Length: 192
Image (tube, rainbow, N blue to C red; front, side, top):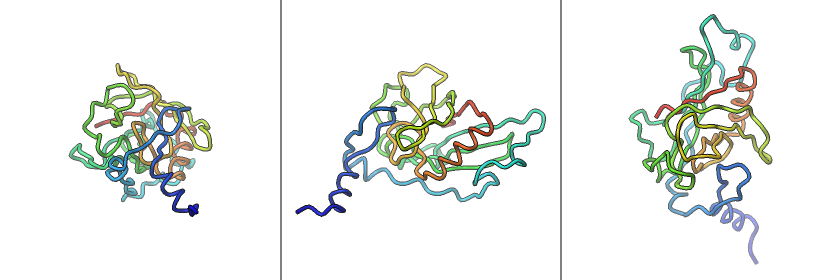
């Protein structure tokens, strides 16, 4: 007789959600699973880490809110797929969240190629949609503002991610969604 807990752990290790809304789960090889690790929590506690407040939502003339994502490793190489998503008001860092984009083994793959190669999001600017339900999860649509074959991209809760920007911690995703709704941010910039 199979015990439910070990069987469930095996099933979870073999499946991963695709980044395209509405697609079914796809099999993940053991090698890719082993090479992808959880993103590390941010070391900096920024003032907006827990969400928007009236004081943080106030902007001076010329200030605006912006979102940027980059690899965690400042040299531009992240063998684990660990990224960080940062929220700014002008030059001030308000919040940052650990993120994942692409399989650890695919960090150097062609990022502009059509979906399915497991590469991270391409560098560039994306139109950012408002948070919307995606099954029992949240989805923030990302529409590239440059020429690419990539499609079905978004920000959502998962780890590992095969090509979207995945936020491993659901509470972090909820806080991000609150910021997007409160500020009306409409763009995300992938910087490396």
